[in-house]
Length: 411
Image 1 (cartoon, rainbow, N blue to C red):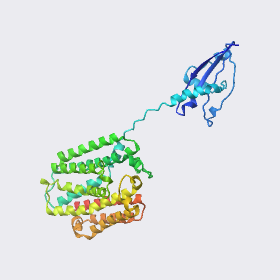
Image 2: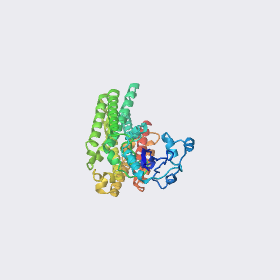
Image 3: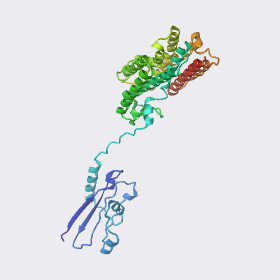
Image 4: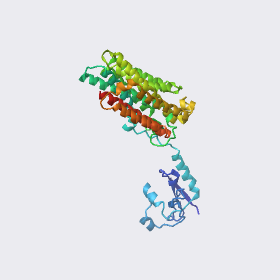
């Protein structure tokens, strides 16, 4: 008997691979118009109990058709596709899989990164920037200790603008460094939340374009606060600091052996120079200049030592891309050199009488308290692992800065 077959193909693609949800209906019309057969292509997943085929063929009468109408919408078809009235037809399986594969081959549009305030703050490392602000405060207190003129309200405003300018300019330097090194940072395999691969640019939470926009905004605000709020001389100093940051990261001086350590050390003590430019006429006396130079002499080796420890943490990331002291001398030797600089600096602070006269002449021995705690933390850092060593040295710097500031304020 002549038989005509009409095929209707319908596909549904969902999150689990699209071929798993493909299904087909086929109907055969013979001389008997009430004989129909529905063919279902089950999902190809042996772990899914719904994927087990139920090979049954039924004849449906008009009464059954009225009681159980054929699904019309997609959700009803999916629900009805697992009915025991369905059959497997291997000849139609290829058609279903091909139709689903065509849909699967179309890539999904990329999801844009979600911008959060916390990501922008992490880009500039807000707590680390207080080290530069602390150096500026120490420099200003050293200069003010040589004069007897009290600060007026206008002068206090100038001091605040100068501190804000330092904070923003050093934040721009941090963001600039991340914009240049985000590919290397993404290779960090270290554990913990502080791993460089978790930084906003390296992890993709922020685009590199957003990072450079942040650098531009922070630089502009820093220059505005320096030139307008502080003084022209301080603004020029701030601009020179930004140029040094540009030379360090984008121009590649951070890849040169010893140069990067000296630049970082200089940036640690550079706010002392900025502090001298806030005086009337931008000129300080001989006594203040000598005290600032002695303070910079102990600040620079501490900045260099911490940078060596950070390079030791990144030795595998920097291999083949940068030339650092740990890569040349070895991690163990570099760590001992770094701790030698730290402990030597503490020895100089305690043994040279000029430092005690400058910072330790207050009724309360804040300077010696800070020195004692900082020295103890530095000694402890000699006998711990690299990550903890770097954190202890960083904390010891803040403790020493706090002791210097309190010692100057209480005089």
